Amino acid sequence: MTTQEIADQLVKMCSNSQFIEAGDKLYSPDIVSVETGAPPGQSREAKGIEAVPAKGKWWVDTHEVHSTVVAGPLVAGPCFAVTFKMDATHKPSARRFRMDEVAVYTVADGKIVREEFFYSV
Amino acid sequence: MTTQEIADQLVKMCSNSQFIEAGDKLYSPDIVSVETGAPPGQSREAKGIEAVPAKGKWWVDTHEVHSTVVAGPLVAGPCFAVTFKMDATHKPSARRFRMDEVAVYTVADGKIVREEFFYSV
Image (tube, rainbow over all chains, first blue to last red; front, side, top):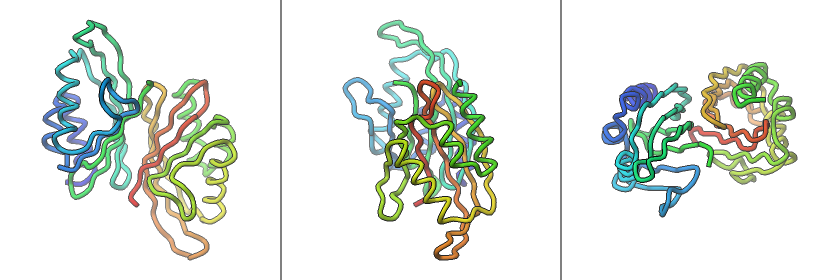
C-alpha cells in the first residue's frame, strides 16, 4: 500500500474506534511509538509489535470513548499527519475529559514504522 | 492569536515564500526546532530566537525555491500540522530536488514554541 492508502485506512479504522485492529493491520513489527509525555509508570517511547499494541490496549481497557473525530490525513512523502479529537472517560477515576492531539506517522515498505503524538501535557 | 489563527498565518506566509518573515512574526524567543536528520555540521535540534532563524536563513541563502505548496493546517489543542511540498535547487551543487515534509507546531501564549519536521532522510 502507498502512504496515502495507509493513511486513508488508518483514518477510516480509527474513525470507527478500531484502534487495536488498525495497529494489527498497519504496524510494522519494528513500530516505534512516541508520546509527548510519559504515561504513568511508562517511558515516552515504546518499541516493537508487543509493546506498542500493549499501550493501545491499556488505553482501550482504562477508558470509555464517547466519540472520536479524526481529521486528515495530510500526506507528504513517507509521512502523514492526522488529528484526533476524543471525548473519553478515564474508567478508574470516572473523570471525563477531551483529548485533542496531532499524530504523525512514518511509513516504510508499506507499514507504519513510527508514530508520534503531540498534545498538551 | 489562537492556535488556529497562528496556523492560518503560517500557511498564508509560507505559501508566499515568506519563511523568514513568518518566523519573525510567529516564533517565541524560546523556539525549539527539530529536524528528522541533522543538517551538515549541525545538530538535529536548534534552540532560541537566534539559532532557529539562522537555520531558516541558511536554507533561503543556499536554495532557490521554484515552488512551495503548503497544505493544512490540521489543528488540535495547542498543536497543528501542515505539509510542505517544495521544488528547489541547492545552489552550491546546482542539484534540483523535491522536498516533501510534514511539520508539527506547538503554540503557547500566542507564539510558536516548537516546530518539528518529518521527512525521508
